[in-house]
Length: 223
Image (cartoon, rainbow, N blue to C red; front, side, top):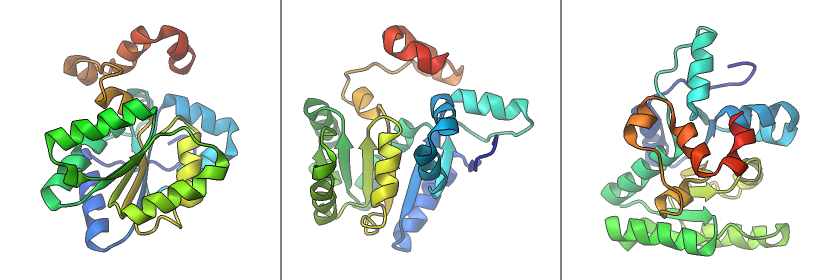
């Protein structure tokens, strides 16, 4: 897709690949692309290299699905990172897997952990940590994640920080079956930010709903 690899996978196919990685005790580095990330990748080589180094690259934003169609590529389905994360936590509950949540403010990530603990049980939680740290603390955090022995690692940071962080440390995190960036998903799960109604999601207008909530912060990205 315009010079970069893109896996044309449905949600169910993506989940099947991740389950297969657990069965074979392998790691999958998952990433999504949207319009904002594609634009940044044109000028940010570290971001581009980090995305391309992923094992699965899904189309998240509807802009990617629409643009692909314009150039003759029929994308099966938009696979939103937040929906994939939600499905994976449900899978963790069913199969006795667990998850580590890294990112966002302390109160936000704690609300995410509480949400999933209440919805399922605290057995799905391997650990959590807020996303405010400097480079000197990174190795301590990586050690914390490894010691907690999660199957899934969800990293809620902005681009390109999360992509570069995961690409930098994925070799050390090889015991984790899935590592993936989830952007602002923690804000939505925690209730800090409202997600668009389902009918707007289906119409491809989730970006507009997000823009209306925070126009000053979002106008440049969506333009």
